[in-house]
Image 1 (cartoon, one colour):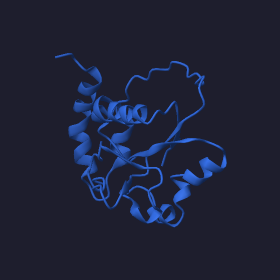
Image 2 (image 1 turned 90 degrees about the vertical axis):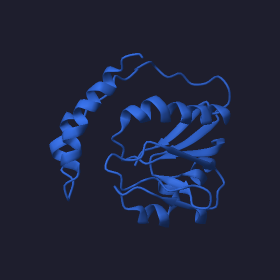
Image 3 (image 1 turned 30 degrees about the vertical axis):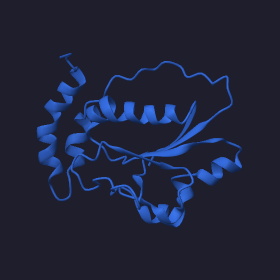
Image 4 (image 1 turned 180 degrees about the vertical axis):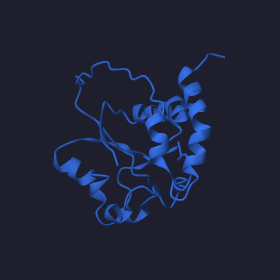
Length: 168
């Protein structure tokens, strides 16, 4: 097995973090300064030569209420999975499983977290699926090693060559 130094640093951080995060309320100031960050590949991005096909990606915890389970929003380390749903899914079938922002705003005006109509009004061609995850996430090793490659496969299958990322 290939050694993963980032996962090792995260595993060392986790036990004391879990104790602090289990408090009511969670003691984020006690653990987040020591949260291990991964190395970031800082290669420059280049504009695609083809017409843009833009994927809409959001950390809002959006999901299709008719066909998908909500994210485990109350998990102490978050939910490292993602959801993909049709870009034209009716608004009434979209909800949010994320406990770290006021979802009432998103429910009243979906455009503030999933700007589908706004992007189209700007002339963007959107891909077939929205990709969403719950932005409260402390299991970065799983997100980096498993979830991101799955999301990229979904985006590639949709023919995305650009992304509009809406962080929450």
